[in-house]
Image 1 (tube, protein in one colour):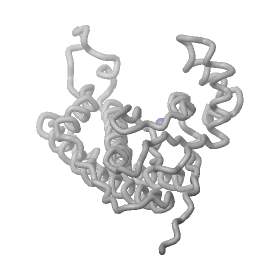
Image 2 (cartoon, protein in one colour):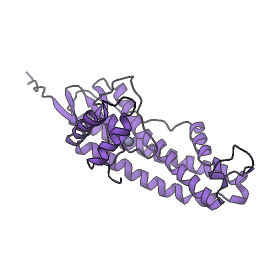
Image 3 (spheres, helix red, strand yellow):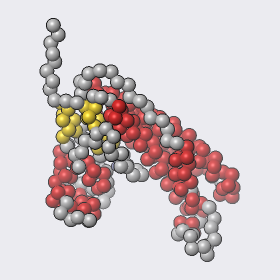
Image 4 (cartoon, helix red, strand yellow):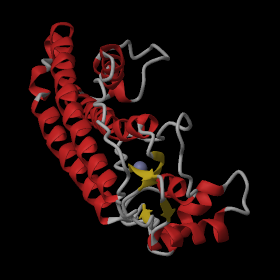
Length: 263
Ligand SMILES: [Zn+2]
């Protein structure tokens, strides 16, 4: 007769070392991606925009594909390790996510480069940015492209965890994890304590967002980390009562209590 292993509920938290290690790994990937995107800047020749911008877009798209696959693989390894740690039964293979559609990547990159194109200064549609010298516009376009690429790549990793949770019968949902240096918006989402289940909410991310998704399995209880509980306390005390102004109030409260590094 086999001994039945007692089912001990394990706890999982947004502040688990494995969650922050995974965020760190994804962030490292972002750093390499950014360096590579920057290296492509010279493809754009200002006197030959028509010919060179499409080449540049294709080159950035190739990086997004390559790094997106790496992000998805990292997320898959993380998910599998979390699954083992949760001691759930049965096998499960994490499906790797397909790259975002070419059209999505291209339209984001076209948006990033829109201020490079010359416009009539008399045209009311001319933006402030378009009046800048070309060298400035190039740097700005490249910065935007870095941000666009970072979000597309990081979304691949987060999407991999979400998709695995959706398909894995042993998973009950996912929770958000944010770094101590994350913005007020992301910290607010962490404090909602929600464990998002199955078909529900998509991951709300922004350019430069390094937040992650933590899978929660059957038999596990999710608990907020100490630092997230402190964010929650600040939210309840200083932001929650001010309907319509909550995010701004929360940002102020975080800053005043030393929870918004860099401000
Ligand atoms: Zn974030």
